[in-house]
Each structure stands twice: as structure tokens, then as C-alpha cells.
Image (tube, rainbow, N blue to C red; front, side, top):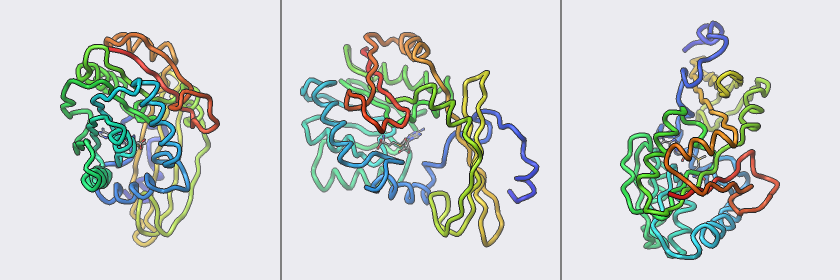
Length: 280
Ligand SMILES: C[S@@+](CC[C@H](N)C(=O)[O-])C[C@H]1O[C@@H](n2cnc3c(N)ncnc32)[C@H](O)[C@@H]1O
């Protein structure tokens, strides 16, 4: 793309029409993103370790009753949850399509001889296996999938669980998805950033499709040296609490319970996320 293409862009993007999500699976992007996952100065890609420790303690005690089980982590990133859960006696499988995250996760568990297996695959196509006591998809990624894909992921997770196994979802609230879509356009310049290691401008614009309850965010990355423009886009489906309940029931889940956070309690920095637990 060049600047003229950008200026002549379609004013309002079709949800998911200009991209499924930010390029987690691009090798260079994933290397840069891994640094953000591991950063202890913010919670942007993964939470800081002290928060993850508290969330893992809640999952182990409250969700799993301190009983060792097999755990499936969909979109596991660098394995920050699975490695901790394995230390508590669980056997974990993580699936993620970020090459750098999966490589990091594998190295960590090899060094510590933990019972974790990591699969470098897209969770839309991956075979999840069966026999899990817990399947989780956390930190908001659920909403980024097209609704029909999100539903297919839930159905596959249901199939992967043992009888009475538990699903742990951490999706976005309806309100935060709408708020993100209604946010003003913005931009920044940087010598090196998440979207490019070279000097660039990043222009961001947001759209809220009220009829479909979908937010779309576009990013135009303008390379300072060449002027080449790269576009990324991601959309997020908003669901009401009733939508989540109906969807889970449709996919075969019961005993649906909502929690304010992954520590079970009201905390300040939920980032518009909350937790749904459901049983097979
Ligand atoms: C916000 S990060 C959360 C990572 C991890 N759950 C955590 O909280 O530390 C979302 C993760 O989902 C992964 N992801 C997104 N879409 C995916 C897909 N279609 N297949 C596999 N992994 C995916 C990304 O690569 C990324 O690691």
C-alpha cells in the first residue's frame, strides 16, 4: 500500500474484512510481541507475573479444587499460566500460533522438566485432543474471532473436555468492546515498535458497528524511510451476558457462572474483562 491507497481507503471497514487480527503469527512481530508478554512494566500482552501467580492460585484452588488434572490452554502465549499450573501438579497442553511464544514456552518447560506440551498451531484448525479436566481461553482473545469461529472453538473445547470438565473463558464485556470502537482516532511515531523494528508512524482508527455489535480497529504503519504503508486490522464481537449464556448452552455447556476476574474478586485492573466458568 502507499499513502494514496491509504487516503482513498473505504471509509468504514467491513468487520473482519481487512484482517482477522493483529499478526501474532508473523515471526518478526511475534519476537517483538514476546518482549511485551514478558515485560514487567505493563499488562498489555500478558499480565505481570505477580498477577498471573494470583490468578493461577485461584484456578488451582477454586476452579480445580487443588486436584491435579489435564489442562488445555488455547492461545497460551509464552506459557506463563501452563508452566505455573504444571508446577502445581497439572499436566498441560498449550496451543498458540505465535512462533516466538511457543519456542519460549518450550524452552522454559524443558529447562524445568515440567509436564507441558506446546503445539504451534492455529486454534481454528488444531486438533485439541480429548480427556481434559479444564480448557481455558483467557485475556480477551475470544471476542477477536468471528462469531461462527468462536462458536466452533467452543464446540471443539467441549468435545476435548472429559465429562464434568470445566471451561474457563475470560472474554470482554459488551461495554468495553463498544467503548473501544467509539474511541477517537490516534497516532504515534516511534523509532522502533511492536508493528515494525524501523522508524514509522502508526495511525489508528476505530469503528463501532452498532447493528452487528462489532468493533473494528485499523492500523496503518507508515515506514519513515520508504513511505510504504502496511495495514493491519482486527475486529471484536461484543456479546451481552445473555448472549454468552445462550452460546454456551448451544455448545453443550451448563452450570454457567460469572466471576469479576481470574482471582474471583473485584479488582481495579480488569481491563473490561471478566470470567465465565461452565461445565461439560
Ligand atoms: C492476549 S494474548 C494472551 C496470551 C496468554 N493467554 C496470556 O494471557 O499470557 C493472545 C494469544 O492468543 C494467540 N492467538 C490468537 N489467535 C490465535 C489463533 N487463531 N490460534 C492460535 N493462537 C492464537 C496469540 O498468538 C497470543 O499468544
